[in-house]
Length: 112
Image (tube, rainbow, N blue to C red; front, side):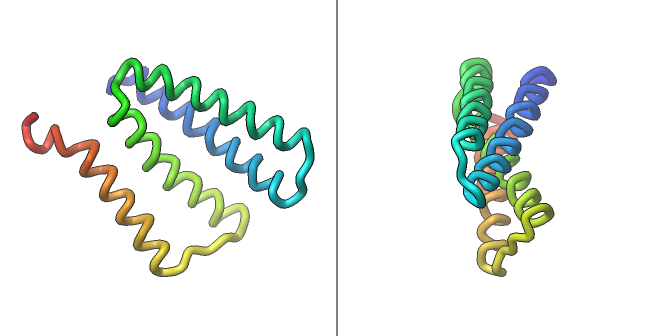
């Protein structure tokens, strides 16, 4: 993935974080405006992901996006919404990060 692709991945991550935050706000106090913003943000994030999938492939694009979002969404949930992970959930998050790293980096570590 090149610099432009990484930038697009960063933008989509920010958009998905905003969408997740909007979804949390909707869950706390549902309203039509909040759900409309949430859906618009998720749609925009997915449109960017479609371009990344076309340019870099599905496995790399979605794997990188998944792990970045996993870390970012957990950081937002823990820092801003006061949510907590149990020890087992924390291990699950760590294992998910390792799994995606292996899927993403595996071909490069094996020399393709």
